[in-house]
Length: 171
Image 1 (cartoon, one colour):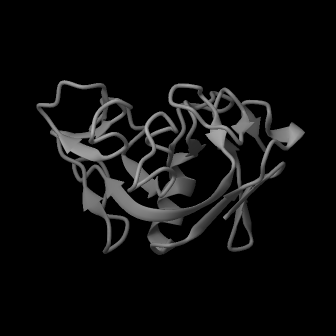
Image 2 (cartoon, rainbow, N blue to C red; image 1 turned 45 degrees about the vertical axis):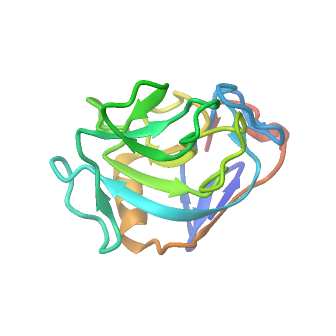
């Protein structure tokens, strides 16, 4: 997978995507809204079993207690955690469909550097031209198709600071 001005290219297809509201950065920091440049690997596949069919054999269901810690000062920073959990976190079982399918990347994971950014996922977009908080977001049908064929370890390449990627939308 490679992010380009025409969208994300994978297996000969182009997928329109949204990126972080802060564009692409080489100096990712927690809360900056930017998508980190680099080479990532897909290391996990999560899904909402109450909303979508299991997309692949290696997918794990998301339950109501599943969270992701984004508290940079906590030992569980950028790790999945379970509720109840008081430090800052994201709820994976969201009321909206954004995390119905989540491809987890190895950006700052599993060995996290505090403050370097957490929860850099590939997930469903809100709507066209609506940026993410740093993730890469797809149309639902595209994300489902990708999740069905993707394998753990697939690389995601995000080129550094390309001027065409400084906007919110790619493709």
